[in-house]
Length: 141
Image (cartoon, rainbow, N blue to C red; front, side, top):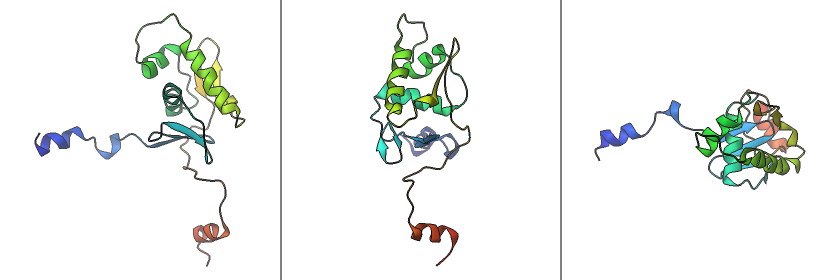
């Protein structure tokens, strides 16, 4: 493969997928394919992660069951299963351990959405900061 052909395979910086996606207090990590709250991992299964990643892509926007089946499950027909509802329930159960089950909302007869601020957040390693860190940010010695 020529270097020009290889260059064309790599998207430019604007098209790259972000490693992290913030959804309120939840940070989704594409590298680990898991979610974390502060320094604790949720232990998401692959489809659960994909479901949250897709919903976090457009917070506050209701995605229909059909949209989720197409985007997360990659199927374009209506299966006779409740797989979406089951996965939503499993994700809610994992979020409930952090009192965050309420962020995954069922919009009756329309679909699901994440009830978190739509603006991007700042990746949080920990809520604890030392006095040294605060002084460094403020410019104080």
